[in-house]
Image (cartoon, rainbow, N blue to C red; front, side):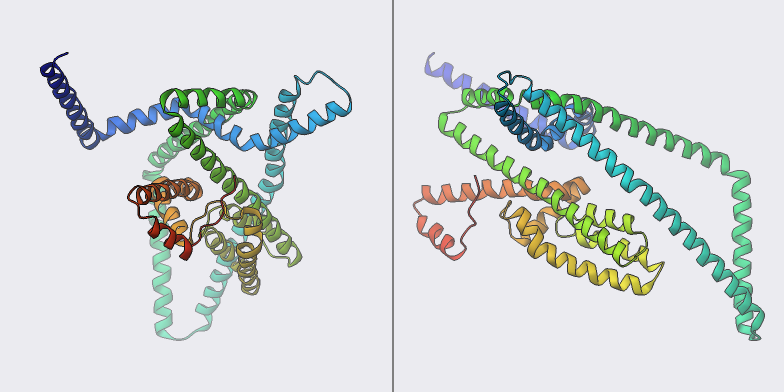
Length: 407
């Protein structure tokens, strides 16, 4: 191809690239609903596989542990056929996971129902006591101003009663229809979640059974697309991603389970009301870094306050002490330095990803940002070395030594 042909081809490639970028920008800004709709549709189709990957990722450490134990057992029993070991370990892991869910439901759900029922009964009792006090106060006072205020309260109650009767007669049917549609939508959503969860468990079995093969296939794809140096760098980053997510998520789950158990023991010993409900709230919200303890302590304290202000004070003091112990002893012992982020960046990650994805973003935002932070750090280090300013890098590392990353 002559010089004119090459120039013509380059111009065509440039025009095609610019056209593609412009069209992509126009689609992004003016046809956002098309893009979001396509992404939502694709996510809905792939949801069972997403569930399966998450379940397989969480269950794999247990499956590997059981597989190693079974191999040692087969070796001691001098059983040569070890082929079924992988499937046996997967089925045992799946059984333990389902058993844990069932036991958790049997232990927690009745307690939550009992606590909510007690709370509703307490609120009804408080309303009746207030009405009794109001009637006695009205009968025993001779102050004209107070009598007028009570008359206004009585009139307001009568107005509310009249409006309620009117609503029952005119708007009840519309409201019931609307609520039935919402209940139907909620039931459909629950059934969809259960369906995806069930299919995800089946997918997780296949993923766990062929984990090494899938990993080897991924390695082949990476080395076929990139040079050996870049491919090795990608593998190292994937290892870091795995370390950040598996260490942080599993560590936070174990840490939160311990905190919830300690809280339950304290509520039983001190005979605090709503013990199971409060312990579940404290344990679940503790999974969220930084804000979790406060998100769980506030509603729990308000629940106990409805029963006894003094017990509420004891609970608040206990939560403050427990969170200090968790932040300085339990958490570091379980998590260590899994993410290598300062408190400022942890706070930033929680707020940023929480605004994007809600509660899920607050949980996974920290390891995601840790990966992004690591990439930026390596890019800065590479740029400084390329420009022969390693003196700045050494000065920074001497002043702010980085924690040693576990491999």
